[in-house]
Image 1: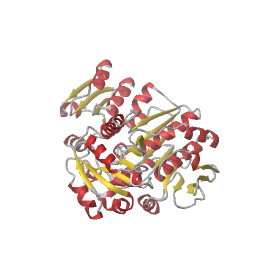
Image 2: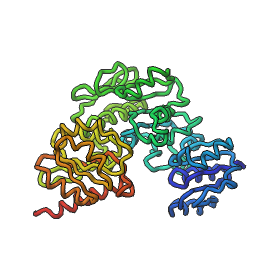
Image 3: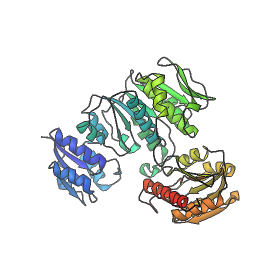
Image 4: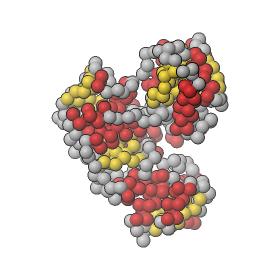
Length: 450
């Protein structure tokens, strides 16, 4: 019986342990932290041995293979020891792929992964395909393979998950964009981050399909230097394509050997060019899998966007409030700010990951009426925009941030939470930040005179 060690007992690790146990492995789970109750209960229910609060080398060193949870950095001592010992190490996505013959659609990129993954899944499901969704958004692929087998899977893949793919082969791979993020994982060098993203096309063959962003300089630079095997389907917001998809005035155009049709953008209530791009990726996937344009249009019109991603919350005194808490980096905030033509009261800040706000300065100068800084240390973001002569306010209370923003806004203007920073200085995560923002807006709404 092969001995399999799973490092980390979150959603990914627990799912891998359950699948491995079902496939007859001798499984041991090791988590440096306390294991959350729901996951611990699943391990106990299936008689899977585990430890928490430590990694015991004596229990790990005899493994035939190790599944590493994506959140564990390569630089940690236990990973260094495993690599030194020469024990094979993979990711949950790699492991799960060994036990399914499903068509695999993988989606990665710095920004837009979750929206594109969910929209792709929605289009396929609405068209009647037997499809599951898993990956980086919090649902374990391994657990789905064990409990919920499907003919198709749409997988959101982070760079952390892609790092340890080995034999896994995707049938359709989508690379949305590459901008600086998580560089602390790669010695603050873009090359390592870019290389991790490109592992998404690993093992792909000539009959497989690669959808990518024609407008992204990092992607195009790589393509110019590295020949790739799968069929290519570029997508552009700025230029026409002979084989791919592009935005032309008021229509999304899809052309090439696999399809030839247009969808008028006014039929689809998506906000911002970035969401146009995300939609074109999802439509391209659906088209490659044989979904016809009429079914795609029906699916687009019934899609509800994800929470905390350009999410409309309420209108108070003619002022519209939007929650974009998922914007944890500068590029995400940039596309949010560019989505509006009205003056914006911008709520931003949080845990600064060494952000370079240069990209935002011309956008803020052009579109932002006032900035409300929400964080424990607001000095980096204040300094970045102090020369623009816009009002800048500071707070560590999201309720106060909402009140300040409302007091500054006039009818037909926008209050936008798009932080450009991580959330964990004041909040548990970006979801907590977004939910508290929504609660504060709804509280303000109830206080308005009827």
